[in-house]
Length: 538
Image (cartoon, rainbow, N blue to C red; front, side):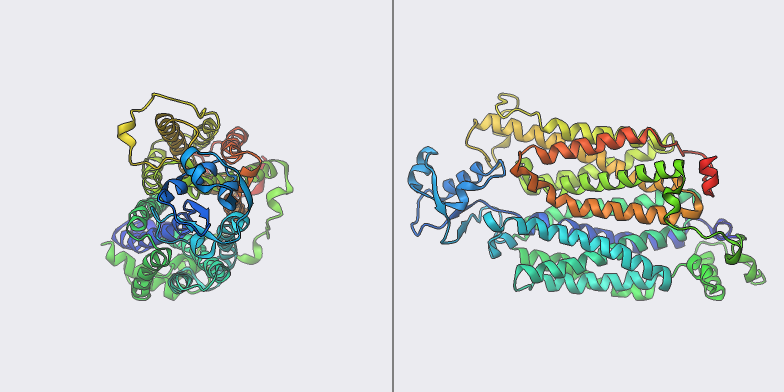
């Protein structure tokens, strides 16, 4: 009797599993907070070089400084203008020298951010994006370190340790004395995020029956989406970055009670020769599910009916690219992981560039995740392949279309409906600005919809494309490729120095290329999983 047969006896998704998924899903809300909080803590308010003179029109000048930098080239705000009052009045004037006296920041939207506290603008602006990339690099390191430790010491203990690190170092980041200490603390938080995400997902799937695993796995994605939406409200209420960092980190200490409620993985215990402990957990789960097992069932019969370890052929990651068909499938899957995560975070972390109110945009982008994750429930069982192709194409085309929105569009949307949105350029009428902003945001939202759905599909698709003997290797390297995309996502906007359209151009082309490459993959819906490399090659 293997473990899946045991789950059929005790219930593949009964009361025990449902309670387990409550414990697994709640932390996902706070994971979303930490993943996306840099949108607000690292925001760049309108800013101007200090001149030592006050101006009654200072707020207008703040708006003007941001308008001039909407193309990604903040020359005016980085230099001292020769005639400040003439720029305010007529939008005219030229910068004369680099700013030496520091910057003034508008407090219309944010009380403080790491940018305003440590002057991460102009020649130091790149540090902000580098800090975000360093955090994403922490996710990559955490995936490697905590993945290895979880295989050795178990899922539960690593989840508990990761939650503790997340709370302690998240709070510590709120008291960072400088940018470099802050970045180092955020890096450690990033490693803990991977420890929770990976092992919570694995712990849940190891306790869930085969038929329910896809739906159960999507539950965690929904709660991440809830966190995405809630963060907009929390950030709206807490405008100081240090207080916001504390607000998202302090609740993490609540999870100390997981020491008493979070179960271990019986499947992992069995795989590591600890059958008696596993059997105790199985009996407890069976009782909670209302399917108690007889005491005379032989524990030894619960061991997997697979070959003994010494009889197995050893496999490594080299087998992913050793044979022709396997190599083609592996490289395509790795690229899909990379492209999905690159575009997902490329859009998520740069919502301020679309021009609408940052809090409203964050909430909309979070709301979009719900239908995106729901619709795949109706498409993925029909065809993994064409679902992946379709959603990649939707995401890519929508992002690509934002590049072609002309700046002079007029008369599409009545102005009074959008008076609350901040004006971002001085080169077009209010009506044209609102139309342009709304359309770009709508297209970006559509792109986010497609990429979110595609990202959910790739989890399932990867597990079915790789054969059993190298499945863990394939998903592990795919996850590393995904984290590489996450590291590069904040760097996309460095490319604005070449053209303001380059980031969204890449966000459009990468998914479209992935959509084309997916045509070369097999459709795995309702088909037996390959067990060996020979099954793939044959």
